[in-house]
Amino acid sequence: MKKNKTVSVIGAGVAGLASAIRLQHAGYDVTLYEKEGIPGGKMNVVEKDGYRFDLGPSLVMMPELYREVFELTGRDPDDYIPMQRLDPMYAAFFDDGKEKFDVSSDLVSLINTMEGISDKDAQGFLRYLTDIYERFIVAKDHFLQRPFRNAKDFYNPSTIKQALKLKTFDSADHMISKYVKDDRLRQMLSFQTLYIGLSPKSGPSLYTIIPMIELLYGVWFIKGGMHTMAESMEKLFLELGGKVHYNSPVQEILIENQEAKGIRLADREVLSDFVMCNADFPYAMKNLVKDTKAKGKYTDKKIDSMKYSCSCFILYLGMDRKYEEVSNVHNFVFSKNLDENIDQIFSGDKLSDPSIYLYMGSKIDSSLAPKDKDGLYVLMPVPELSTAKYEWTDETTQYYREKALKSLKNLPGFENVEQEIVSESYITPLDFESKFNAYNGACFGLQPNLLQSNHFRPQSKAKQCENLYFTGSSTHPGAGVPIVLLSAKIATEELILDDK
Image (cartoon, rainbow, N blue to C red; front, top):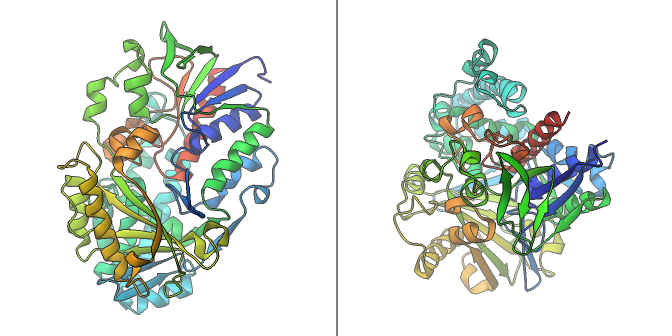
């Protein structure tokens, strides 16, 4: 047991909480420091006028990784994060809402839907599943669950052989188009790269594993919404004897002779044997690591030159009625020209016809809205702040609000949606930057493009500083809640390895 060893964890985001739980369970004395007043980081909550919304993540994939954090400590996950599977997983709307496809993870239902579009594309879809599943197994076994501490961990014959099997040089969109030709099917199978802030037109084809994971393993819902996961991890951490300090922003990671010694808060210094940093890696290297040698190659100039994921504009709307005409919890409303929409997100142009994602948790959980009412979470991917060719002002917010409501009005039953709003709030890229220290307001951290993935991505163990570790969406293996949970597992295993 490591009872004499102390760990300071910076940030109570998903990876920070998971790391804290793993280390506390392993016998370390762990204290968590969080700048906000509640746990979760971007897995936060918006509560207003009797409505409760997940602030950021809203869709549960790979539930076994959520459950693993609790199972590790001998707990029953169902006591903490009761889940149910959604079928259909989501609805996809095209042509201004005139066309709707329910997307199921039941293969019989899914093939029926696809055959209704094209027999050839249904056949192509099955070939896509076979191809991407093979690559998924390679990624899972050889890349997603292991660190790349040194160059030789990647540059060796065995790993290079496996890397070639991933076929990463093609784009996600182009890879899908080899199998399905119908634009609607292609879009339904490629847009999910936006879940991790990456363009399907330029993102490595490997990321088409995201729709495959949905289709083979399903989409789930946690009772109370995603913030239940954050609250439950905090509860478990405290049960294990961990300590949490909220409203305690860390100002600096204390480093002497390229060795982390603790952290500095506004009113005191806290010494510890190890530091686990869940603050966004680019922000942390630029603002918390002040020792030049400890930064290594991640100088301020390097951080600014790296590629960042897109950001999001999200509306949280409390409505004075329920919307029975749309039955799904998750709904995607596609732009008439999705290719142009995606180009504008990543070129920084103002979006002329944005796609939106509509999430209605109150459809399945009545505790999220007043009786006989629905809450609407309306998300729009937008450029991150350094890419945007315009300033984010009140006028920008109003512009995108009107675009979002225009898209909603095309859905059945939503014709008078603007008049039915009784409560409203929103979050912009500026808020992601200021509230969550998301560099450039990029919701998903560093883009997981080819040159910022695997061994090219920031790793858990600091390269130029002992006893300092990083976890979260900008570190290996990447963004998305399940992958961030893997990041926490890798980071804690690295720390424990060094402490042997």
